[in-house]
Amino acid sequence: TRPPYLGSSPKNLSVSEPPDRCSRLRMSERCFTAPDLHKIGVLMPLTDNGDPQHWKAMACAALLAVAHFNARDGSVVPAFSQHSGLSSLAFNLSARLYDTAYTPTGAVEAFRVAQDAGSAGLVGPYRSASSISLYPRGDFLNLPLVSYGSTSVVLSNKPAFSRTVPTDEDSAAVVVSAIGGFGWRNFNIVHVNDAWGSPYAQLIAARAAACGLNPPLKIKFEYDDEQSAREAVRTLSKQPQTIVVLLAFVNDLPGIFNEADALGLLSGSHAWIGSRSFSPASVNALVDAGRISNTTRDKLEGMLQAGHAPNTESFGLFKQSFARLSPEECEAMDPQLGGMEPSTFADPPENTAYAFDATATVALALREQREGNLTSANLSTAELLRRVSFEGASG
Image 1 (cartoon, rainbow, N blue to C red):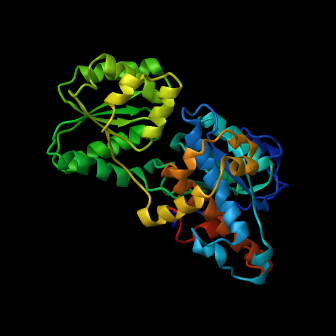
Image 2: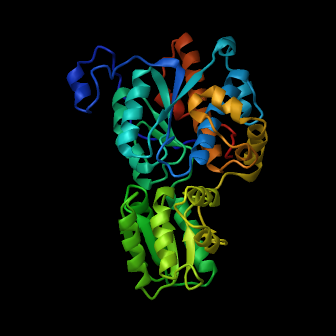
C-alpha cells in the first residue's frame, strides 16, 4: 500500500507560535501541543453512524494494526517484523479512538482533542466532507492525516492528507463499465450532496459520456435528511430511465429505500447499482433498528454494488488475524468498542483492511521518524509518509 501523499512540505511550526495564528483556524490556544512520536490518534465515527457493529470493527482493525506493530507481528504487514536499527526494537506505539460522530463538525472536534493529546499522526477521518475540513488544519499544525475512506478527488494533491483507499475516479470507471456491460445506455444518479457524492456523480457522468452512454440526470439530496432523500426518490420516479446509480451513506438509506418501496421502484421496475459506502450488513442493521422493514430489505436482495475492494489474498491474511480476536479483546483495547458481536470477527467489513493499512502507514512513518531523529536526519512525519510503501491488508 502506498498512499498518494502529495503536496508542499508541511509548515515548520513550534509550540511558541503566537496563539492568534492558531485562533484563525478556530482552535484553542493550546493547538500547538508538541507531538509525541509514540501516539496515534484514530478518527472514527463511533456514534450516529447507522451501523455500530461496522464502525466498531473498523476501529478494532485500526487498533489491531498497532498491536501487530508492537508485537513485531509481520503476518499481515511483513514490514512490521523488519526494522532499520536497534532502537526500533524498543519503539512501541499507543493509539486512541476519537469519535467524529460522522459529521465534519464532529471531525473537527475529534481532531482538536487528538492534537491536544499529543498525537503525532492521525488515522482518518472516513467521510470526504470531514477530511476537507481537516486537511488545512493538519497542514498548518504539521499533523498529517491518513484516511481509510475519503475517496473524493477533491482531496487529491492536498498537503497533509493521504489515503489508503482508491479514489472515486477509479470507482467511477467500474460503475460505468458495469452499466455498459449490461448493454444499458440510459441511467440516472441519485446522490448525496456533499464533498463525496457530488464530485463522484460528476465523474460517473463524464465517464459515461466518454464511453458513449447518454448523459444521466443527477438527482441530489442532503445528507442525513430523510425528507430530502424521499423527495429525490419522488423525482426519480417521474423519469423514464429505470437504471439507478445510488451514492449514499447508511443514514440516508431509510428515506431512500422506504420511499422507493412505497412508489414501487423496488419491485422489478428499476435496477439499482449502489456504491460500496454501505453493505448488506448495514441494511440489516437498519432493519434491526426498525428503520427499514424486512419486506423492503428482502426486495434489495441481489442489488448490484460497484466500487473498490481490497486484494483478495491480502484481505484473506488480515481476516485470519482478525478472526482470532474476541469481543472482549477489542473492548480491552478501547472501552468504546464494547458490545461487539462475535459474528463480526468471522466476516469483517472489507473497509477494515483500509483502516488497518492507514494505521500501519502512520506507524511505519513514526518508526522511521524515530530513527531519523536519532541519526539527525530530522525528517517530519509528513515527509516520511510520502516514502512509506508496504504490503498490507488491502494489497
